[in-house]
Image (cartoon, rainbow, N blue to C red; front, side):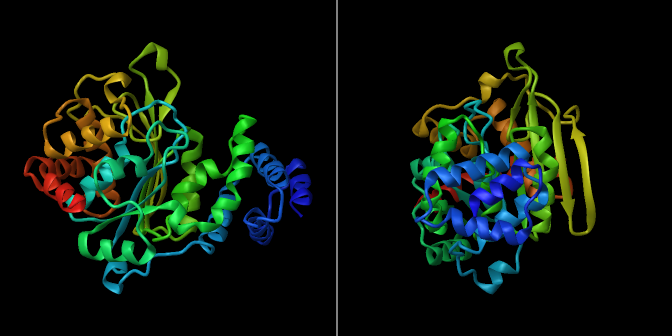
Length: 350
């Protein structure tokens, strides 16, 4: 069946939702060879995934997940995730993870979905673990953490057990140097099904299809961003899967109270310090955890803080906690400077 679908894709014909559900069943079937799965994934990537196909894959894979049993009071509130697809290969510190913790400190419920490093130097699970925050939560434990603390880390393997049957095919694709749909699906598969999402992608042309897919999945408030790095000649043409303080930002966004829009965000109105990409680079998981601590404690006040405030401003706006990105920047800074962020970090690591 996968071979037949691969032939269809080679003819530049998109897959129907029913075909995608059948393909997901095959991809998660341990009896089907990794080679057949890899050939299908390569054919899909070469055709190019449409927003409809991306959303259908996410829907089918979500059905195989083990969701946390959220309390009605938790589900009734806005639930946020801040996540990047990875793939920018620029070795920055864990900006999205820092932002997620900061938003939780500001009073937003945050269900942070993530994994260990795949395309980055240090994955979100690696740095969360190094901070002393529980990583290996069961679905029930995650639901309790969201209710009690307003934050939980959802370690992908614990919520997507069927993915172990896809991993060998993904490895084959990686050995060929071929990206697959799984390089962009991660942010769409949060088993808590957040109502608000700030998603970073590593190429500007992914902003619109990713935002359309989020919208199709029922996310109420979403912003997909890709930031340019223009400050170093050697990095011209590079993109961050975050909002960047180093250049203009490509944005696709939608909100339940108003429609879909695309724009280019410039940063003249933000009090940014001069910075280069080198100022945003991290190290191993212990070094990155220390960067997170210093930012949330308020002792790091340089370009790394700026990058966090910018992205936190957007996340707080998306979560409905601020009326604008600029107001979100101010709220994020206050949450750090009043000690609230450091207190939240200590609570979560306790």
